[in-house]
Length: 257
Length: 220
Ligand SMILES: Nc1ncnc2c1ncn2[C@@H]1O[C@H](COP(=O)(O)OP(=O)(O)O)[C@@H](O)[C@H]1O
Ligand SMILES: [Mg+2]
Image 1 (cartoon, chains in turn red, brown):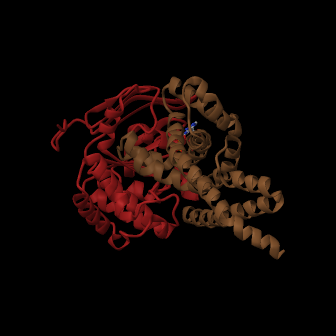
Image 2 (cartoon, chains in turn cyan, brown):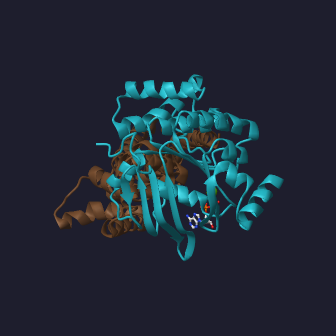
Image 3 (cartoon, chains in turn cyan, green):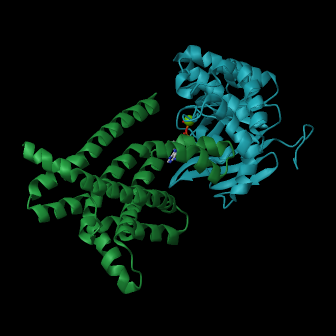
């Protein structure tokens, strides 16, 4: 069933010639990106440069205008006339964590983490709840299982959102500025969970403003500007010795903040 | 004054019977109309242009035609098309059509109030369209629609007074009949309106409380 295995040397994510326009506004201008299993890629760059759009094309929350997106052997072409079934197949392998958490407010924390396991993976409620409790314990929130999301702090909600995505056993996790909506100290709780995940070998693409995370945790950093990748390479190299003038300007601007 | 109270006491059982009939008609037309309204709220967003257009036509006719006209069509019009309904059945049918059209708009508004991020989260989790609707969008959208739906239910109860025009012996028909036989129209109609008020005012207050509760829950 699964077309890929742990020893597969093909990239887990392969984005080729990706273009995306909203009307006449071209937001992604030909992106190529390949991510290997176990790799942690950080995407940084000024606001409006297309980071979120790139991430959302990877799990097809946005359809793209040209090029292809392949995740774990499932390939989606442009302006996908793709069937829902293909999209679901791709999304099954991809977990996503949003800036604004997007927990389901009408379900308690446990149901939030269990519902997709039951509906998408066909686990029984008992199996799903057991897995959910494992994951909630792992993010330090087992005691919140019966609470509603509104009763949890932002940092707790984001950790629950991470547990919810992990519950489907994804092969890759996408994070779109997961700490930007949080006070710094609450952001730290979330970053700690992400670090642990990284140490556990999870493949991750992380759009972030946290320069420390980009430099210390990720293997590779991509800098985007105006819909293009303007620089990429091993984290330390890119962060400390950027080659292009635009990258230097961006980095010194964020560091001055 | 004590004379009027005496009359009211004498008329009360008959008027309560009329009120109860009105409640039954309102209840039945809502039981039929609200699920139909839900279906219309969903088909108005369908991919198929034909389905969307058909829904719009039904909703616009249902909302554009005065309830009194719908009642007369059902009672006096349908027999010429070969379908003869009792006053009760015609009342339920006409008010159900009216309820479906109005509640479809209320429910559509509720569904549209569900944040885009909720649908994206369900998509990102790989949930099917139907599961997304059933477990994520409908529960939240219907919670938003609940207070206005209850408000509309009160309006429908008041609307049953129109069934007077097609001989249904509901509250206003009864009050009118008492007036006709005793020439005491004013006290009979006043008592009828007091009975409506006794149901509708507390119900409206309840809806207000519910609205504030749900609002607080969603803001949190
Ligand atoms: N749904 C949309 N409709 C129209 N324009 C959009 C939409 N989403 C994003 N954009 C535009 O695309 C550009 C890139 O946005 P985004 O990917 O969110 O950037 P970033 O995440 O790097 O801040 C911006 O100019 C933004 O206004
Ligand atoms: Mg963004």
